[in-house]
Image 1: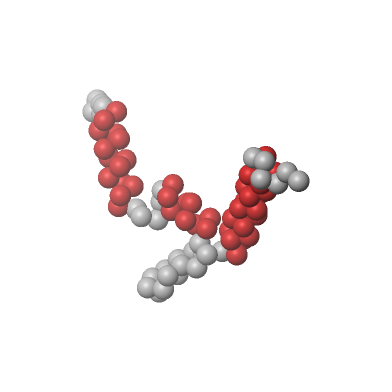
Image 2: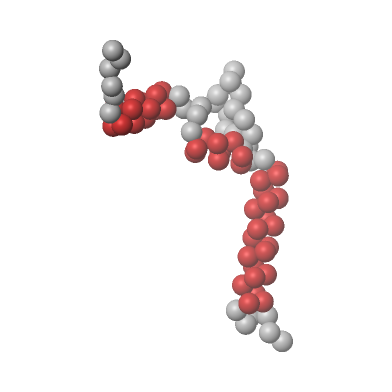
Amino acid sequence: MAQRITPEEARTWFAEHMERRPDYGFGNAILNLMLYPRNPFNIKPQRELKPRFLFGVAWIGVAITLLVFFNFGIGRF
């Protein structure tokens, strides 16, 4: 009969497995949206930001600025 494992043992095993695999994970997925992928043959250079990400951040900043400007009485003439 197969040995039963507890949920705590499964979580511990999964956490250890994910720590050994730095290429997986939610944080790495977010970084991959913002930065160009790593070069597996040359790991020393710093990853650069994607222009698409910078463009999106700029537009979000403009939208928030306009929202604050027109909705909080600063832009009333």
